[in-house]
Structures are given as structure tokens and as C-alpha cells.
Amino acid sequence: MILKYISISELNFSKSWGDGLYKIKNLNSFEKAMTIFWLLGPFIYLIERDPADLWLTVIAIFFLIRCIKNKDWDWMSQLWFKLALIFWFFSLFSGLTSTDPLFSFSQGFVWIRFPLYVAAAQVWLAKDRDIRVMMLLSMIMGVIIMVIILFSEAILANKHRLTWPYGDTTPGGYLAKFSLPAFCIMLAISVSRLKIQSIVLGLVCVLCFSATILTGERVNVLILICSGIIAGIAWKPRFKIYCMLILTQLLALLFVAYTNPDLKVRLGKNFLNHIPFIYSSAVSLDKNPYWGAWRGGIQQGLLTPVKGIGPSGTRKTCSKLDTNLPVWLPGKNYCGNHPHNFYIQLFAETGLIGLLIGCLMFFSIISTCYNARRKNVNCPMSSTAFIIPFAFFFPLQQFGSFYGQWGNLFTWFAIAFAVSQFQDWDKTKNDFQ
Image (cartoon, rainbow, N blue to C red; front, top):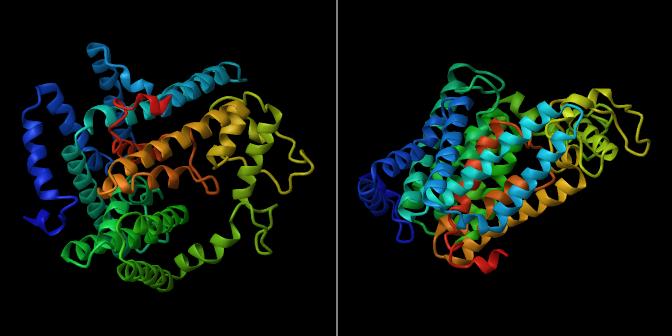
């Protein structure tokens, strides 16, 4: 069986698959159906955003129903969820007191489905390690399918930006965000020993990275580079193998870039010229849309610094701003749907209070995942878990909308898998007070 060729003593895919199937078989009908439904997630995400959103939302709703039926609310004692709940309540208050309360309140209200999904994965569907390994295998299969799709598009369509299977320029999010836990785990294993398992998983990592480069999505390429560097040293690294894999990925980047002139410009000169907070002679701050989006968010936050203008309110008011103000902030505003940075968006839409609560929530999620590493340093899944939220919440990068759909579906799925590695929450409640 092929699982034997990727199994190691610390993560035996073959055994966990067999044990996981046995455990699922012995669940009651409801639990069995929901577990299988959860394991299908990586394939549902390959379809489009609406089926993926429906999948995640159904899990969150059934999780709440299950908690009501079983009167099981102990999981809410975790600090990360308490902060998520407090942030949600404050964002609803900010929405109700905004200039467009119906729109803003509705945008903030539906956001809670993401933390609820994380909780559902951690304390219900992914509570068992063998089931988590089965989901990891589903993610790896999803990565392979997406890589095949993207390489096929690159060969057959010969386009500057890849769009299959979604029809828009976001397929790299599946590989660099949704599948980031799988990428980090595979990379960590691949540099831990020189065996057939390392070669197979290392090859999948290189193909995943190369396919992401082909999409032309610069932030996603950067996420994989930085996360891969950390993952390579997070769990039992062998320096020579680590250097070999990093060199291989660097060569893949150079090969793809230099065989595709458009990607070479996009990932090279254009990338450096469009870093939001760096002045460039080629693209000044007045003409930089990335800085312009940040600037518009900062300006709106300064107008309502305490509570903000309400969830997703930046898209409504940015175009009405006097861009000459504040005079000390250089550049010109670019008014898109959001400021393209979580922290600036939280400042603009929920004010300093929401920003503070949000930052505490981010830190608590990272801390929870790092506690998983401390509890089980011998497992590559738990040892690399902290990398996932750290990569997504690192402040100096471009983000999608904090209250949006597609980007959040990618990131919160990965965060849920990372958080689920920590299973001592019910035994160490004092650690979360």
C-alpha cells in the first residue's frame, strides 16, 4: 500500500488510516456521517467558494446543535475562543452604530462561523489523532489534485495568471493557505531523514511550491517560502537535507521565473516595487495601490479611532475621504473593498478597542498551537502547528478582507487543523484563564 512509503515511526499513515476507519465504523450514524463529511472538505474546496462555505457553515451549525443537546460548553473556557467571542460582540456593536448598520451588522454577524468551525474541529471532529491523520491525507490528496490541475492549465492554456479550477486568480490560496499544514508537515518530515519517505514527501512539497509560483500569486509564494524555512527547523532537522530541499525550491523558483518572462517581472521587480511601506523610484507612494489601500484604512481609523466605522465599512466610505488629510500621511488613497491588511482593517472598522482584542485573539491562537508543540514535540503535526497562525497573522503582509469569504475559508480551515493538535484544553483550564 502506498501509505507505507510515506509513513514514519512518529507519523504512521498506514496504521492511522486503518485505526481511523475502525473508529469511524463504530461511531453512531450522526457522528459517522459528520466525520466523513468533514474528511471530504479538501475535495469540496476544489469546487468553488460557495460549496466550501456551505460545508464549513453546516459543520459550525451542527456543532452548536450538538453542544446544546449534550449541554457541552466546557470548550468555551479556552482563552482564544473567549477573545473571539468578545471581539465578535464588539464588532456587532460597531456595526449597529455605523452609518450603514444593516450592512455592517450582517457582515460582522456571519464572521462567527469561522471560530465556531475551529472549535468544532478541535473538540469534536478532529479530537482523535488518527482522524486528524486521515484529514492530513485528504489534504495531501487535495494538494496533488490541485498541482495536476495547475500544471495542466499552465501547459494547455499558457496564461499569465492561472485561474483553474475557480475561474479567478486565487488557486494559489488552496496550496499556500488551505493546505499550509500539510505543506509544513511534509517538509518537516522530508528534512528529518534521508529515506524514501523524505524523497516522496519532499517531491510533493517542491511540486506544490512550483505550482504556487505558476499562479503568480506573490503573497502565497512568500507564505510558502517563509513557512517552509521555519517548518524545516521546527522538527528534527538534518542540516544537509534541509539545505538541499531549500536549494531545490530556490532552483524551482528561478527555473519557473526565468522560463516565464511575465512571472519573472511579477515575482521580481514588480514585487519589490509594490511593497506597501517602501518607497520606490519606479512606483512612488502616490501611485502604489497597495500602500494606497493601507493609507485609506489608516485614515478611516483615525476618523473613528475608538470603535471604528463597522465591519466591512471601509468599502462604503473610503471614496468619500479627503485624501489631502491627514497631511503627515504620504501618498494617495486606493479605495478597494478593504484595506488589504488585517490590522489596519480592524483599526478602521472596529477601532483601537477591536484592534486590541483582535491582536490578543491572534496571539492566543498562536500560543494554543505552540502549546501543542510543547505537549507533543515528537509529532510533526503538533510541532509545526504554531507556524500556521503565525504565517496568517504576521502583520507586515497583504491580506484579504477580515470579514470576507474566500480568504477566510482557506485560512480558518488551516487554523482549525492547527488548533486541533492541542487536546489538553479540558485538563488544563487554569492555563487559559
